[in-house]
Image 1 (cartoon, helix red, strand yellow):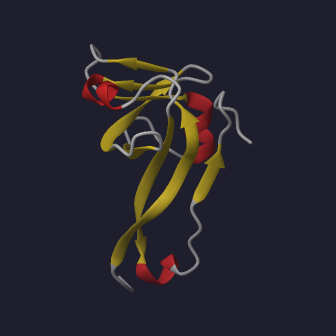
Image 2 (cartoon, rainbow, N blue to C red; image 1 turned 45 degrees about the vertical axis):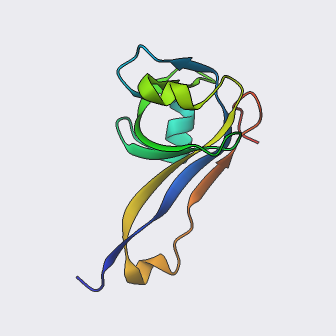
Length: 116
């Protein structure tokens, strides 16, 4: 190995709007399947969610959803309200030398979770 692996932001969905919450679900965040693909995120991938409205941050995993859907499930549902804007981030291990040229994929969203 040439260098040390470091954890860097790989991709993010910026300012996604929460469309639902479901406390009774086992856990996770449901994300529009097309947005997952555009961001290069994977089903069951660990993601960090930051709520812009209230400052809460949480780690969970992504599951595939319907068009426009961004839903916090399980305990995470108590940390957001419908309409809150959130940032969903995925990270990856990248060789230290490659990190200099690394640019994360950033997908900006409007209030209806459409790509801007």
